[in-house]
Structures are given as structure tokens and as C-alpha cells.
Amino acid sequence: MDLTPFKLDIDELLDEFCEEKCTTLADMKRVWLAKKISYIYEAKPTSNSAFFMQSLYAHSIGYMASFGALSQRLGGLYCLYCLYETQPYKPCFKIYLSLGELKRLKELVIDAKENGIGVVPAVVKRMLEKTMFLFGFVDILGCSVTQRVEEIAKLQNKRARIAFDRLFANSQIESYLNMDLGAELELKTLKKMSMEYARAKELAMKEASPAAEVEDVLHINENEKTACDTVESIVEQWEAQKDDFYKQTGISRHNEMVPADAFNEIEQLLEE
Image (tube, rainbow, N blue to C red; front, side):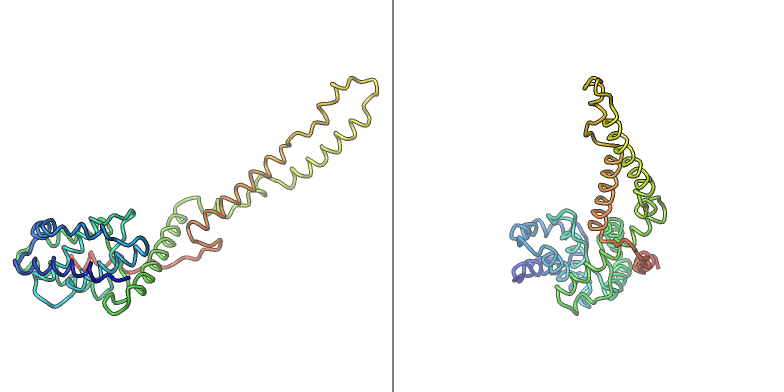
């Protein structure tokens, strides 16, 4: 997949932003609209959407995390924000940041404050509140986009497992998932009773008086669905639904607790 034209559009956008020595998000929005950058998504690929979005994000992060002029770094941050907000995908693809980029983001906030650009902390705070970021260990500029997408998938799976662990810790869900509904409803006992009932019906028909009206005994031998059949069907549906739950969530029947990750530190870094 050749993403060079898309990256060139971002280069032109940030070149103009820097040439005008812009520093605010309002400036970026003005240049963005003037150059009609939102049309970048009109030519988006029909597949590999995650690869596409992470490539655009990575290119913007390259500017944001660089050691270039402040205007260039700010442009990278604002472009990143606009790319996320205008993307056509639902749910939105999150922005992957390594710990190295996280450190550079902190330094950018500090530099912006020192230069009286108060909108930067507000933008970063909004990005955090909307959980736009995924934080990981892999250096975004030192690996391929494929590696980055794989790392993001691992992070998302890990966070999903952590979320389910926390959910189970505060609810009855785990006990329900581990419950043997057949045992709870005494299915074996019901089966035994059902067999005894069937034998009793058969015996009743044999012992019925030849003179008895057919209608009087016909209902005894009707092949109707028993209570045991109903309960067994419910148990089978219960097990099928549990299997679907495990498949959809990606957790196992013997799910192990995963330690919470340590990437919530960005808020502390920004408050220093």
C-alpha cells in the first residue's frame, strides 16, 4: 500500500502552518480547511484501515516528537488531533504513542506553557478525556507500521481482558459463567423422574380396561414435550450462549488476572 500521496498532503499542510509561524489550534483549523485536508479520507483504502490510520498518525507524530521548531511540533500535535476527529471510522482508531513519544508530548506541553500558548494543555487534556491514545513500549518511529498495528492489537486485547477482570470482580458474572446450570436445575434427577413417568404411562395403558373409552386414556399416551425436555433445552442454550460470550470477548474459561498496565502516568506528567 503506497501512502506517499497522503503523507505529502500532511507535509504540505504543516509546511504552510510553519511558514505562517502559526501556534494555535484555530490556526491549524484555518489552514486545514483552506487546503481541504479532510478530503484525504475520500481516497482511503477499502482494506487495512488500521494500517492506513496508524500511518497517518505516525507521520504527524514524527513532527510532534521532532526536535524542530516549536511551530512544527505544535503543527504535528494539532494535525494529529484533527486526523482523529475527522476520521470516517466508527469506532475511531486510537492514536498509538510509545513512552518515548509520551515524553516528547510532555516536553511540548511544557514548552507551550513557557511561550504562553495556553491552548496546548487544553488540547492534550481533551485528547486524554476522549481516550484518543493507546500507550505502549514500541518506539513508533523505530518500527514498521505492521509491527505497530500488531502492538496495538495486543494492547487492545490486554485492556479488554483487564476490563473483564474488573467487571467480574465487582459483579455476579463470573459466578454465572462458572455455574453448571444442569446441576443447579437438577437435570439428572429430572431425567430419572421423566423415565419413571414414561414407564408408568406405558404400564397404565397396558392395564387399562378393554371396555374403557379410548378418549379416556388417549391423553395419557400423548407424545408431548416433558418438563425434562424443556429444562434440557434451556441448559443447552445456556452453554451455547456462554460459548458465544467467550468467543466474542476473547477470554478463556479459566481466565487469568492480568496486571493493570502502567500507562496512566501521562496525566501525572502533564501536571508536573
